[in-house]
Image (tube, rainbow, N blue to C red; front, side, top):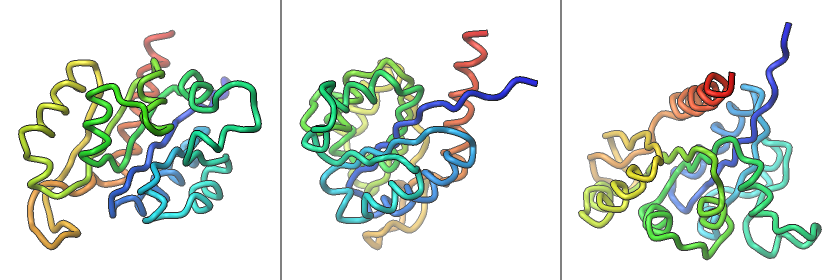
Length: 189
């Protein structure tokens, strides 16, 4: 009987009201047997605390380049190299734009720029922002580079509007992450 090796999932959490759902997502990924390392943008910590994700993932949480003082090697590069999957959920329009344009002003964007792992993005934002041509162009750019997207879905948004922009169902995001990780095993075997 072979034991499944844990995969490293870097969970990027951005400044969307849906950030609270990242706690359930981290928990599901850990239950699937993965090592989860949360990386939060400065705005994400306004919606959910790093301590919550640290407790659920059982790993330190990165929120700043200045978290990286304990090691000679930059933590964001270490996570970029270690990652089997970079999962950004929720992903704001701003972070999607940063990724599309190669900006690296915070650890999450730097990891996305440095990793060679598969990237899965689960957007969450106002429907008008999602449908804006700039956002759609950025999504198209990222898809052309091999980034996968799941969602967003349609429904009542936190801003009070009805429309597309809600974070995809957390259990389905975890299922898609598991699929992508299993596909890596099949490509190696």
